[in-house]
Length: 92
Image (tube, rainbow, N blue to C red; front, side, top):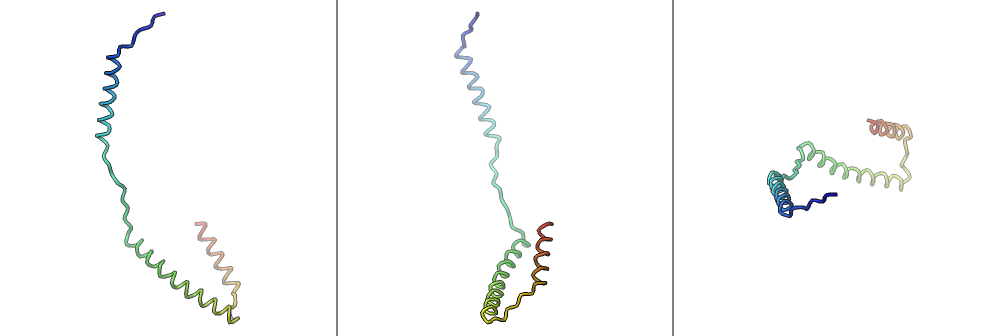
C-alpha cells in the first residue's frame, strides 16, 4: 500500500485560488432593491373603498334604528338573490 503525502504548499495554492474565485463572484453581483408603485387606478379604488365604509356605517345606523322601531322588514327574495350573486362572483 502506497500513501502519498499531501504537499502543504499545493493545499494553500488551492485554497487561495478558490478565495480569488469567490472575490470575483461577489464583485459581479449588483445590489438591486425591489420597488413597487401603485397605479392611479389602484389609488382611486383605495379612495373609493374608504368612502364606501362611511356609507356602510350610515346604512348600519339606519337598519339599527328600524330594528329598534320595529319597522325593519327582511326581503327574503332580495337576500337570496344577493347570496347567489356573491357565490357566482366567488366562482370566477
